[in-house]
Length: 116
Image (cartoon, rainbow, N blue to C red):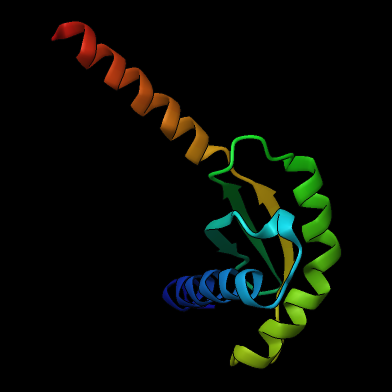
């Protein structure tokens, strides 16, 4: 598949999965999730979906288990919204980049406060 097309599909999957989590799934553990990015395999057979949360006390393992259980439902909803013959299998991966970014910003703020 063309790399540009692959990225377009990955972006569309990111948007749609985010909408499905907000509107279609009523599990409160998934309400605070953010879809950071989606990496689609070259052949389109699977998509790795990177998720995180702004909530600090969330159990990442629990969320991954819930997402794995709901992946069939999410994939079925994607099938109706994507113009693809084969909808990729979804693999959810916890992404700590938001937390790490907050820690870096906090350290920078602390350094700025010390300099002032």
